[in-house]
Length: 303
Image 1 (cartoon, one colour):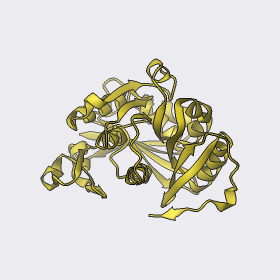
Image 2 (cartoon, helix red, strand yellow; image 1 turned 180 degrees about the horizontal axis):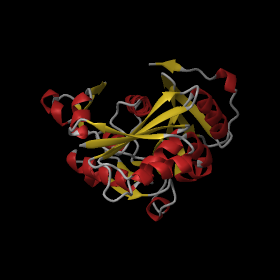
Image 3 (tube, one colour; image 1 turned 120 degrees about the vertical axis):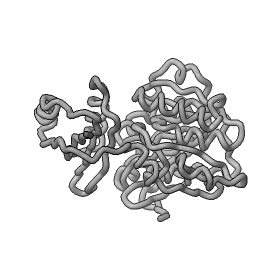
């Protein structure tokens, strides 16, 4: 019999924290995930799956720490990862085709095919924040921008690193604070035959020796959360080449406006912005000199 431990939380940060905490249990859960139920009310649901009944003390401890109710429920026996994989619909963005193992028969030699499986790390391409990053990156490529040195912060499954590796001769560094994400990214890079282009390391943003000693980057992917995006602006400026680009994602409309103001104050200009539902993503370019931008002139494109 399989079991699910679930609860409602007040932020994505807390939901990630709960998942990370429970992944350290012995024996480990077989999977975890979280979903935003209501942006206005800031309600997130977290679900942790077990092939054994979790101890009641785990539930009580979580309720004590996070001051919310958690439920342990029995679920029908099934391979939840395989079930999730079968439910994932392939994604096409221009000539990029992202698919799971069950859709290999749909791949085409005329497309850049990327195989990503459902996993405990974030990033199958289905979430709006990831999709927007892909669209913005592809937009840069279509304009003739082929970065040679790329940093992927919060790489998750490594999907953005894999996509970037399919264009040009980029040298890519992929980092994530979560070891499961690091291991998952390494596996996916090997599976997509691009591991020789990418170096994957566990790192809290820029705070890793390999990141700090690498030459400056032409492009930085940062599909994470608003607070770290806000705090790392000086490090971004330090590690980007002049006229280099950063793609910021995983943010709401109001957060995007704030980030534009913050990054503009550090010498960046907006290149493009996209929105899908409540999620926003922006591309900004490091300028040779600081510029002053009228925030009222920003426009948002719908996709």
